[in-house]
Length: 73
Image (cartoon, rainbow, N blue to C red; front, side, top):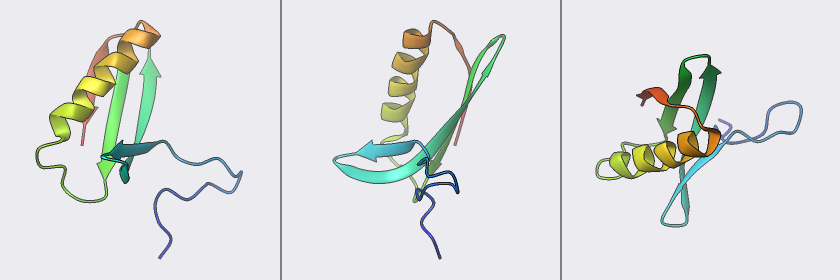
């Protein structure tokens, strides 16, 4: 089985989630007119770290100048 973070056929890696120096999952975002939808796909349950990733997503949305309309995991 190939790890989920390996690159697509075009050689581009998927965006990764890192916590404590360890790759813990992948994520994707969809930009819409009303804001950003973010999907977190952790390799195992985040347990106490989900809020940490939600805060980072907020920083990302602030950088883009768009609101988060949904975060899904």
